[in-house]
Amino acid sequence: MSDTNRLTTSRERYRVTTSERTWDVWTRPFDYSLQARTAKQHDWLSREDDPFGYLLFITWAASRHSGDIDMSLKFEVYRESVDDIAKLDDEEVGPTEPAPGAG
Image (cartoon, rainbow, N blue to C red):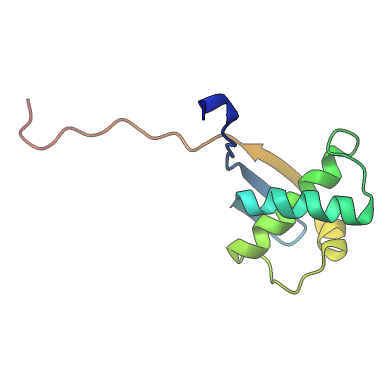
């Protein structure tokens, strides 16, 4: 199988802000799969037609599995509480410090 035929996923990092607090969350492949299955089941608009609805669901799913919000929090309640979602770049890694005595 060639590399172009292999399914790849990328994790993304988002900052979620509500009136009460702000947190950062990483997505995982399961979150995207859950969104696709749920969207189909409820006949929701596509990611392209409703990008904010898509982001709300992805961050809700990711926040539940990360423990940032309670697993019992319903999507409809979460959706109404979010003030902002920002996609964050991957954390930059600073330069490695040289070992003591390296020269």
